[in-house]
Length: 324
Image (tube, rainbow, N blue to C red; front, top):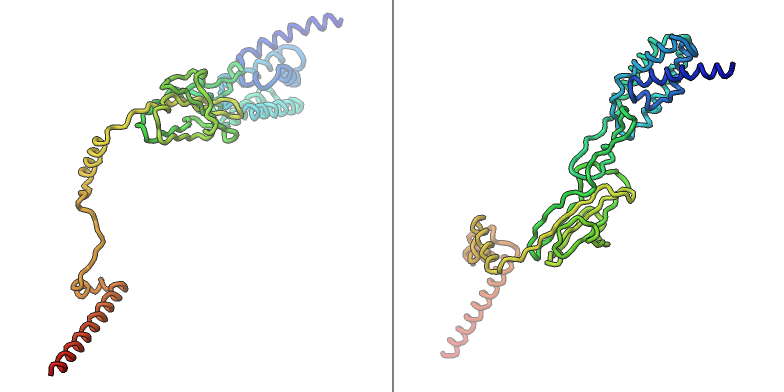
């Protein structure tokens, strides 16, 4: 009898598996187990019979439109908790002699509202980088999908004149994690334009996302590489090819400077501005020129003039009376 009972249970399980495969990897399949779904229908319709098959068909049909749902990868746990709560609610409804024809559509509608409240996955931003924030989970297949971009970004070309400065910004267009972000810089010299990591050597002092070289020399010609790391895991590698050109002759530089001054309406070299030194007449005619310093100067001049006049008068009278 035990053998017969076990053999009769096998076709029933196959029927259940076939019925639940109808919505092919819907969210219901991803976040609930076969055992849980079977247990719910057994509570509604019994352990076997045509009513059990109807329950299984109604269960899969109610969630059929959730087969192609895509969510943010980080929201998987939240959605899993929502499905777990849903199975408990369905078990309580079955225990209260409720109808699965009403309970399943209601449960599916509640799950749709939960999914709508979840933030969608961000769009992939080309052309490079491991964009974890754009990773998504697909209910159709119960798997995650990341942006299919290479880790290495295209080389950016930068031409700088010798003696000037060069700036490199190790930034990307996609969102980075807020914590544990580090940067490492490398250099491949000799004027080499490459992305082959075997040619690069570390630059220990460069650690931030900005790097600057000044003054630029011909020995700096080559490719600079910046790696963006999150918890020591690379997210993107940027490359900057620096082409150093020779400075123009001195005469050409002076000619360019003079030409710019003419275009900007700058004064000529002979038209230099000098400090204003007012004359005595301007001091007397313009009250605003009588600054404290100028007033002291006028007082000193008056004292000298008075002393000179007194001395001349004394000399004149002495000479006059001596002659008589």
